[in-house]
Image (cartoon, rainbow, N blue to C red):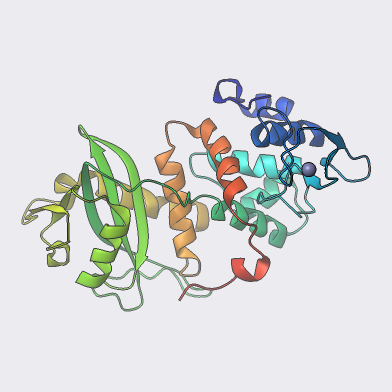
Length: 310
Ligand SMILES: [Zn+2]
């Protein structure tokens, strides 16, 4: 089985039929891991037995090393069934708004909120490809303020560019002949030059034409062609239409799915949003990407997942 995008389920019903059992999910993982047949990660031999005593684990005929189809993926060492992981990845990758831990718990009938939350957190960790290419060509950049909620307070709606008690986010969108392609979002501490330069230099390739408003923090970024447009009486959504749309969709998503984003782990929520935005025309392939990226992401233990971002 190649797991090619062409044969990937297009609907919930197809998905349910294709991945109804543990062994069907394991077969899919096997196909992604060893598209040309089993290869021992220890000695490179191609001969192996499927163990009867350990689920979906192969023992190399040459060196005796045992390798699970989930080894090295975010699924490894999880007590949850593969079918649950597959459903969670499918819902998170293909649903236009993604899914919250609460929704996942209800939809998959999971026993506890903590289990659902861990599942979401691990999938979210798999959403940033460490080898992703920086944005290039023509890129719009802007920054915004996101209202946040704390445990007991109502949503705070701040005003102005001061960052006290607010969540500040920098964003960039690659624009190709008037259409948005890929985006980046990053939590920043201030709208000052240092933070803005660091964001642009990490997100954008050298020699990119950066289009911004006339906020001075965007000036003099090394190796970047900068085109600052004075917003004046013109609204920002005309000058920088795609970053404006990205920010407003982000805020609506935060309110709709999470009833307001929180400061804790905000960057991971931004990564989730960008993951889906960048794959909005290939939602079903996003499932493959999620598992594919997951295969390159080291498993994150619980204490790392719950670490609070400053
Ligand atoms: Zn071997």
